Figure 1 (cartoon, helix red, strand yellow):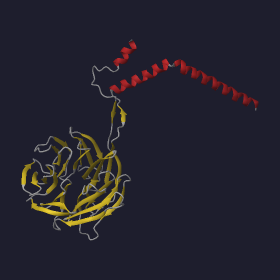
Figure 2 (cartoon, helix red, strand yellow):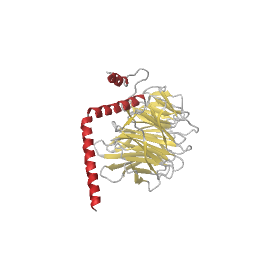
Figure 3 (cartoon, helix red, strand yellow):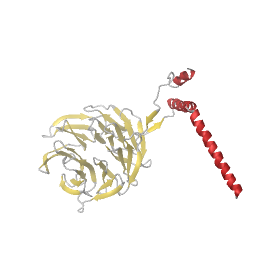
Amino acid sequence: MAFSTFFNSLYSDTNDVAQPCFYVVQRYMLAGTLNGHGRPPNAFAFNGTNTILASGGDDEEVRIWDIKRLRLCQRLVDPAGRWGQVTCVQFVNLDAHSNADWLCFGTGRGMLAMYRKSRRAAEFAEAWTLRIFAVGDSVEAFAYDSNHQRLAVSSHYGKLKMLRLQQGKFVESWEDELSDAIPRALFFSNNGHSVSIFAMESGAIFCRDVETSSTHSIKVLKTAIGYASHCQETGNILVDNMRNGFDLYPHNRNHPSRHFPVPATKMYVKAGVFGERGTIAVCGSDHGMVYVFGLADSKPKQTLLHGSGTDLVQVIETSSAQDDHLIASGISTGKCNICIWKRSKKHTARFDGGIMGERLMICNVLFILLFMWVTRETWLSYLNDMKTNFLQILTLYREIGRGR
C-alpha cells in the first residue's frame, strides 16, 4: 500500500503544470551548400517533388540543382546574350496530364522563357522565349493560374500584361500600366477571376479583373512593400515592411494580425515566404541569419546561420514534399552561395529532462527493481549456473597448465 501511494505520487501534479515526458524535437539542419553563382542569386524555385531547385541570378543564367545529391545538373544560358539578369523563377503546372516539369523565368531585358523536362529526360529543353517588355524594362514578377491557364506579368517600370494559353501558345489578353509604382508581386485570387498587384513604394494593393483589367479595389498598407508572398492554403499574405521585419495579413485584411521582428540596419529588400503548408514564415535578413517563425508567435522558433553578420540573405524559398520540409536561402554578398536546410517529416522522439522526465526515470528504475525482485529465483539460478560453469572451466585450464 505504501509503495502504491509513493508510485502514484510520482504522477501527481500539485505545484507544477504537467509537461509531456516525451516530445517531438524537429529542427531544420543544414543539408548542404551549393556554390557556383558568380554573382548574387535573385530567385529560387523547387519542383513539386523536392528533387530539383532552380536558381537564377545576376550572372544571367539559371542553374538546375539535384537536391538529393546536392550537385549542379544543368546551366541554362542564352547563347545570344539577350536575357540579362534572371529576375524571377517558378515551376508552373502548364500541362497537368504530362509527367513533366515546366520552368518559367523572367529576365532583366524584358524576356520570358519557358523550359520543359520530362521525368525521363536528363535535362531541360527550351519550349519558347517571348519578348514581353522593352529591352530596358525587366520582368519584375509573374504569376500563373493553372485552372484558367492565365499568365500575369509585371515590369519594373509598371507595365502589366495578361496572357492566356491558346492552342499551346500564350496570347496577350490585355496590357495596362501602374503609374509611379513598381509592381513587386502578383497573385491570382477570387478563384482566378482577379489578380492582386502589390506596389513597392506606395504599399498599395490593386485588385484587377483578369478579363478586362478594370480595378475592383485598392488597399493601402501602412508600410512599404519590399517583398510579398501569398499562401495558397490559407490566403494569408506575408510582407517585408522594409523597416523592422515582416507583417502577416489575413485574407482581405488591411491590418496585420502578427508582426515578425527581424532587426535591420540596411534598407534592402528581403524575401519572406510561407512554409510547411502555410504554418510557418521563413524570413531573410541583412546580417546572415534566416528566421523561422510559427504564425502564432512573434518569437522565432529557430534561427539558421547562413553567412557572416554583414551578409544579405535576400532570397528564400520553401517546399514540402515526400518526407522532408526544405528551405533554400541565398546570400547576395560574399560567396553568393545557396544553403539547403532540411527538416524531416518523420517524428523523432527525444527525452525531456524536466520534472515529468525525472519522474518517469524514477518510475522506470523502480519498475526494473520490482521486475528483478519478482524474477529473482530465475535469474539467480542462471547466475549460479554461470558461476559454476566458469569455475569448472577455470579449474580445467589450471589442470592443463600443470600437465605441461
